Length: 291
Image 1 (cartoon, one colour):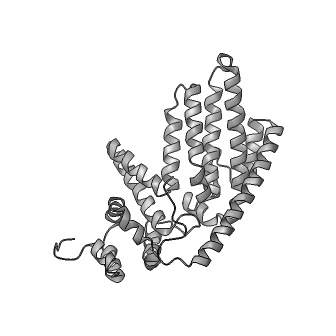
Image 2: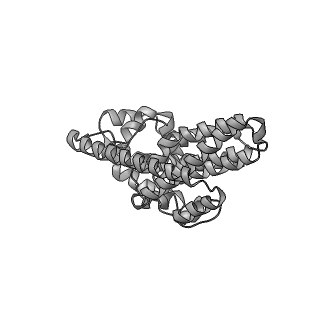
Image 3: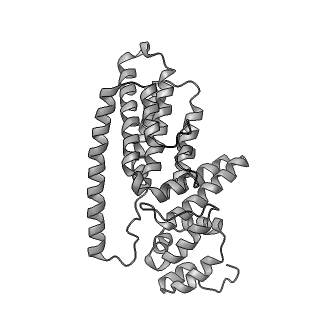
């Protein structure tokens, strides 16, 4: 703000002067808005209240030429701010400012940005020049830690995990299994099970993930989700079956995905019922803690 005598965003929010806040925020570019939200997390929480739904809806539509769609699991504020921070991270990386790049990427991840997660996983894969079992264990733990992100995004989230486990299996193939056969077998079976399960979860969620798929792949469909440019999840399942023929493990993973899907659906129904009963007036129902 150029006029220091003007009330701050915080002052206006405390006075419930929401129209004045929207007018001021509407004059800011995407970068300024995103950085303000990260510098003022308490105010950002208020900006996610219902009074600002239309503001964030318009900003979400404007952040990409692909006109991002509203999706379940990630509110418009986080979609907008998270993607802007991801773009800022890419700009800093291109300029060689790696510290600022990492800062913006972490902030984008905290806003549940699927594109930031894609970039992060890609960097881990690229860094694995000479993988060992320690790397495998660390990578597996990282993928496991992103399961909450996957649930938020549905199909593209689960395909991100599947892609990670696919690359993890490739890294395992470069390791001499004879040096530690039991550990190698444990990691192989665990990674393959998780790959299958992620693919089945992605397929189960597909009908409810239309908007998330559009956003994650910029309107280009599932072919951008995998290294083989396959356009359907069934084709991905068959490709993995060609590369890793282990029918018993695949069937176990399918059953695990079915069970997990039922649990997630039950939780979603319960959460929706609670939200309607409580009629929250400020906090966005889908706002969630950091990953």
